[in-house]
Structures are given as C-alpha cells and as structure tokens.
Length: 119
Ligand code: AMP
Ligand code: ZN
Image 1 (cartoon, rainbow, N blue to C red):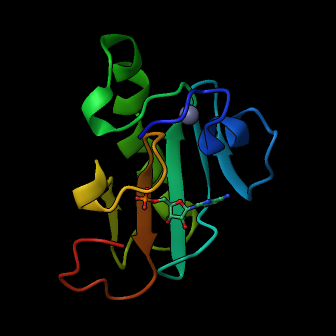
Image 2 (cartoon, helix red, strand yellow):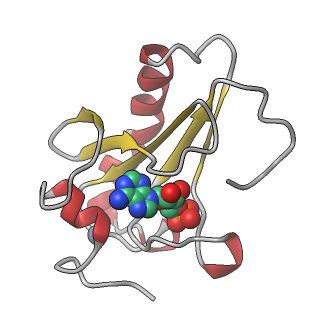
Image 3 (cartoon, protein in one colour):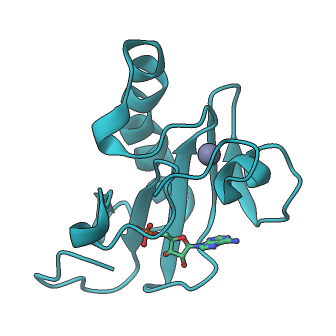
C-alpha cells in the first residue's frame, strides 16, 4: 500500500515537515539515520521524488536512483565503514518486509553483517 506523496513519511522528511537526522542532501537525493538502527551505521538513502519502491522506478527517476550507490560509497567513507565493509539493500514489497512505501536503500555497516539478507 503506497501513501500519496502528501501523506508519505519519507516525502515529509524530504520536505522537512518531519524531523530526521540528515547526513547527506543534494537536489535529488537525501540520506538520514534510521530511527531504529540495526547496525552501528544504519542510514537510509532516498530519492527525494516520491516512488513507492524498487519496482516503480520511472525513466524520469532513474538518474537520481542510479546515483545512490555513489552516494552510499561516499557515506560509507564518511561514516568509517568503507574499509570494514558495508551493505546496501532495498526491500521491495510486503514479502521483502518493506514497511515504508517510498523507495529507500538501507546502508548498513560497522559490524560483521553475516549472511543476513534483511534488516
Ligand atoms: P523497510 O522496512 O525496508 O521499509 O524500512 C523502513 C525503515 O524506515 C525501517 O528501518 C525504520 O526503522 C525506518 N524508519 C521509520 N520511520 C522512520 C523515521 N521517522 N526516521 C527514520 N527512519 C525511519
Ligand atoms: Zn514519498
């Protein structure tokens, strides 16, 4: 179930209507700390434009989404996990455990993440 952009939590964070611990921002991409961190470093990276999930990326949104791995790599350096290793993942849909239906990528690091495929 996807909320309209007017009601979407991560759109509200992107519009600064809901506070978040921002760690990166440019015209198209925003990153902030996950409110329930599952690792010492647990950031969420989103395209600012509303998109429900990984299965809904439009050609118009693709450029911004395509830059997210580069943003993640820079954030991994900034947060001291580039050498130790980090994971970037996006849950798409209910079976994957997606709970917020605005496309987001979890950047996790700071401890051995093991074989776990979800957060
Ligand atoms: P997912 O379950 O993959 O949809 O991930 C949603 C993530 O958003 C979870 O890890 C939540 O802890 C996180 N989250 C929910 N609300 C907030 C918030 N207000 N600020 C930061 N992170 C949040
Ligand atoms: Zn949204």
